Length: 153
Image (cartoon, rainbow, N blue to C red):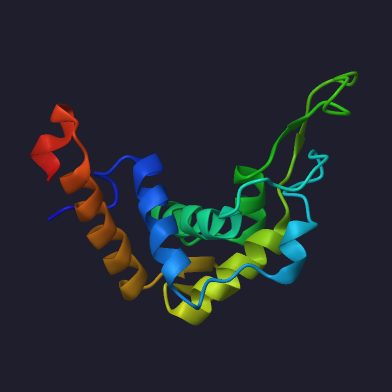
């Protein structure tokens, strides 16, 4: 049985992104074209499928680290900021990612039935979410042409 830990993260997230693009539960809000992904950024993301990709990444992150809260996920999706991106004039400091993006995507994943709120612990993946991740990981491993991963398929 293939689990989400067996498939490479990038390939699993890419396959989940394609799955979420077909679903109606995971939709980008209208404000996502104007918002930044954190205070350390100057511009919004340029990817067309940013919202679905972030939701897929959050689902995998909650499954691996869960139960996990929004604040911990903000730290995971943050980066170091150094003043303006153009000039890099300040010393490096850790900046958190956007909590609104993470919270809204997690709420959409909850409505879809993939994530649930745990009592005083944050969010964790449900059985349906785990099944989606494991099934997608199996499909990813069957399509990958990497000999070192053949034993997991």
